[in-house]
Image (cartoon, rainbow, N blue to C red; front, side):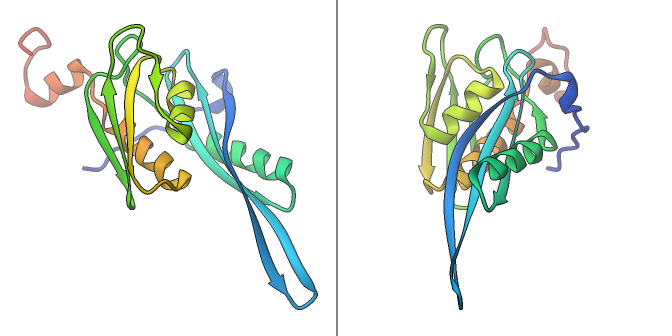
Length: 169
């Protein structure tokens, strides 16, 4: 199922960035070792349920983070939320990484680790249970989390797809 998403303008949101992972990469060349850094960044506006991720590479950490933020701003998604949690349980997959997201009652908080927590807090989800399965690689975990978030549907959308009214559901 292909999902058509319209381009979201990063300037109209109050985006907060969060660095998920920084990786130091060394390339061995004739003259010695060339060091470089790769940064994985999540940006989001928790008030409007908008979140995105990006990756940046540079010779120094601050430049890599800046590039990651710019990349994330070009890759924004709007998430379907019900008050403070997600509408239904969903399993996102990317590569060998899988992320299970379950709705939680008020007061539960974000039960998530590392990369998934960064995405959930940036998206404005306040109560959710998560489990990261398979690959612990932060890139795969974040992409699997986004796959799960894109699969979320609200009641009106499901009713429309089934040709029913919201009251019939």
